[in-house]
Image 1 (cartoon, rainbow, N blue to C red):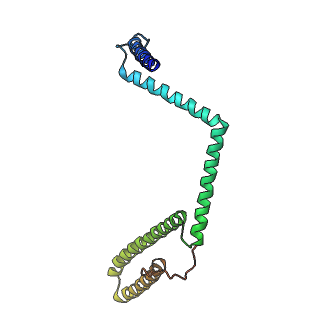
Image 2 (cartoon, rainbow, N blue to C red):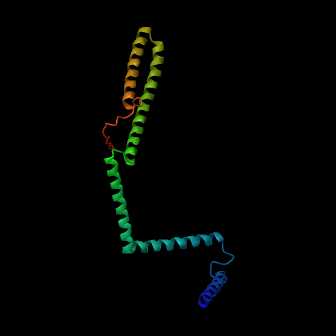
Image 3 (spheres, rainbow, N blue to C red):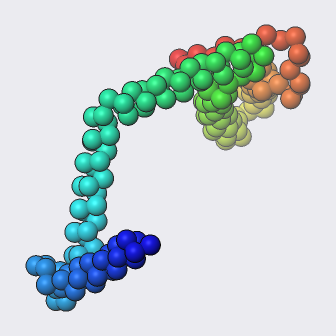
Length: 175
C-alpha cells in the first residue's frame, strides 16, 4: 500500500516537473508556433512507428507468423474457389470477368447502333432527293440491316429467359 502511494506521488511529481520544464526546452517555448510543434511531434511519432515496424518485421518470430497468416489466407481462398466450383457457383472473380466482358460487348453494340443511326439519317436525307424507285431500294436495304441488327441483339441479349439448370458452367477467360 505504501509503495503504491509512493509511486503515484512520484509519478505525479515527475509529470509536473516535466510539464514545468517543457517551456524551458529549446523550440518548445511560448513563442513557438503551435502548428510547428504539432508537425514536429507528428513527424517524430511517424519515425518512431517506422522504427517499431522495421523491428517487428526483422523479428523472425513475427515475420514467420505474418508469412504463415498470408499462406493460410491463400489456402482459404483456394479452398473457397474449389468449393464454389464443386457447387457450380461462380466466384466473385468469375462474375467480375463476365461483367467486364458484357460491358465491353454492350459498348461495342452501342457503337454499332450509333453508326447505323448516323447512316440511316444520311441515307434518309439522300433518299429524299432521289426518285421513288431508288428510295424503295434503299428502304429495303435499311430494313435488311435492321433485321440483321435485331438478330445480333437477340444473340447478345436474349429475352431474359432463365438459364436451364442442366446448363454447364461457363468458363470465361480474359482476352
